Image (cartoon, rainbow, N blue to C red; front, top):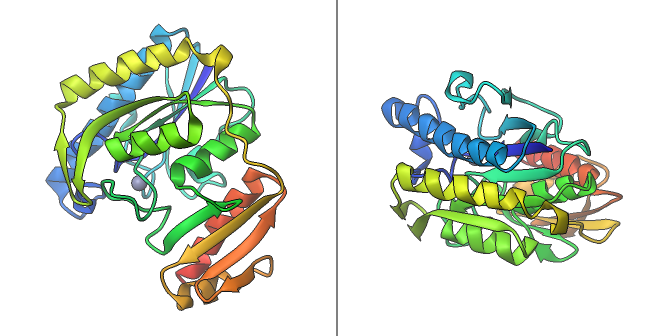
Length: 271
Ligand SMILES: [Zn+2]
């Protein structure tokens, strides 16, 4: 059994602020948080192998995507490191995998979760066929396109609720309770690593009945920006239709197509 893990940073144990999530911001804090990121990841890796995984691929999915140190991981793991990558947070995921874990994820833009956002600060909302989705939904849809279910998600309590609401029977671990966007009540990493390891192993035993997330196709995607200038930039792509002052809309034949157009639109929105 092959397990794919996409690892973000905002939903990692103990992380509550942007300054902890990138080099050059608060160097000491970042160094500690990238190790916490490897800790949550390693707990999931241990659970996956204990649950019968034969191979695990970890994709560093945060910021410049060079946060997890290879030497902090189990030697059986392969690490996808660096950016840009065509499929970004799910680069390397395909139909050869049987399970996806989303580790250290954060809730979607506008929810009360720690460091909530959807891919960039530019988006107020992203909707699939009218339903709001965050990074969890965007990445789960790509996994679903390849027929692979998301069976474990970790982050704060708001992310855990978002995962259950969207995916149903998913194992969700809350490593912290959000107090606000920049404050949380955090469990010690020794406790969260145990919770994650146990949930990962349990999740492996549910693969037979796990359902991939498959929104109806063709997929209508609305990208709602904070300001009209960002929507102006996104509209440099001829595929996008302006459906509101701050909203652009397109229809995608499949989630991979939707994912790549969304990412391109976000880049252009910053131009
Ligand atoms: Zn991130």
